[in-house]
Length: 169
Image (cartoon, rainbow, N blue to C red; front, side):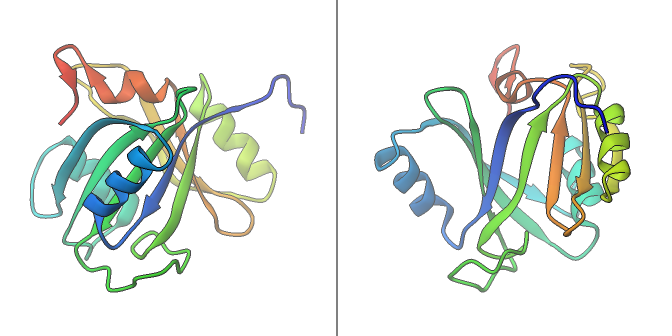
């Protein structure tokens, strides 16, 4: 597989048992910026975040809250608290405490999906336009050959999470 340029990271997602405590830790200890949130997403709602979450997580997750943080160099850090999470320590499962996925930025997510499949991975969500009425940004999900979840953005983390009137809520 030919690689013509290095792919950069967009953000990392981490599930925790206490979102407010995590925001406090990562902003105070790590010095990261708190961009937006907490944002509540419910499986029973009909909006863009719920629609995308249903595609990513399937059925049965009920609800979660999350916040967007960023490092000094713009590396994004999403922190999630799932309603059904009963774990207090990492289990490497997106619905429990631990790292759930990482995200890379590529101008053509479909092309990167082809590369991932060619390297032994699989597509778990085909490319989707996240905000069809506002922004042309595309996202997709895949797994590496070991089942680790990879999110792909066509755009930067900041552009995805900041709208014309400020942070996306």
